[in-house]
Length: 450
Ligand SMILES: *Cc1c(COP(=O)(O)O)cnc(C)c1O
Image (tube, rainbow, N blue to C red; front, side):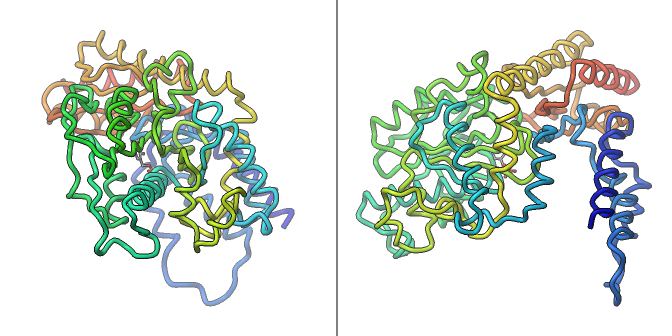
């Protein structure tokens, strides 16, 4: 065991030191070599050190170097050093994080992290938090809590009786709703297509003036952080309108919720604490390793009612209950460990600085691209930049060239009918030098095509 872990640590260290010098995307040759990991199941046991060597030798070159400073695809984020190390230790512990009796440490880390999270995000200290796999499950879990609360109000116990014959819930979403939220609705029997879609503005923000009539049976789903533009719905105004009508407000803040942690950006999500539930990712902007997301519910009892395995929680409403009372999973890894390590090392100031730095780097990208004569399609208010290099075909060719060049990695998207390259700055590891090096590479690639 000792030798195996020492060797693996050495391999991990070697991998991390290669990330800054290799191309960000794996080469086609590295991907082709992945065939060596398959084949028929071996009949006989193999030496663990040899298996780990195979995994590293074949696997590491085929990774996307998204843990480095020049990966800007989707909205991904890296892993802060302390969170990677904490994750090693948590894997070593191999704790079942579902129950306090199975792991006092996992539970204690979640309790500590929960308090810090609510504090730093400016959310009610009494809210309930579930440590889930990502924002998709966080959205699902929050929507389940909302479904519970809205139907309970209508005299219906959805956990016991199901949805057949239940009073209807009207689900209202912005036209720029994230697909994961729609997936949550379909998993919950609320239907991805029976939603009312609200028109959005040029940045993708829900228009309060275009809201349909809301009522106490409405679930209004709003968004903080559009995956393309980074824009946030006008949370304060939407919450005020919704609550006057008795509606539930859920916020998909997969990455945008973290803007609340930076005083320089918090105005973008003003009023966010007024919502009823929130979904966010830790593996994106908090920069912890996969997989890690958070469901937060103003009234813990609603989340608990939706997630508990039985109705016994009703008799223990005064107690916090078990970690698994707040998540879809029962057994799971000690997911709070890395979140605890991130917040414990960053502190309030470090977290704010990381968020602000990423936003400033996005602005630097936008300025550099505009200066070079390319069209930035969005108002760069947070960490996302959309750039077009001409028509759709030209832009797609530039994206392909940038990805093949390897200095950085950016993906493509379509924003309100325009094909664009999307730059998401969400990693702690990105430096100003990374931005300048990447800008130079993008300009070089674009110059050969445009
Ligand atoms: C990334 C994202 C999600 C989904 O999160 P996962 O971590 O992939 O499950 C949901 N909503 C928004 C706005 C996102 O950016």
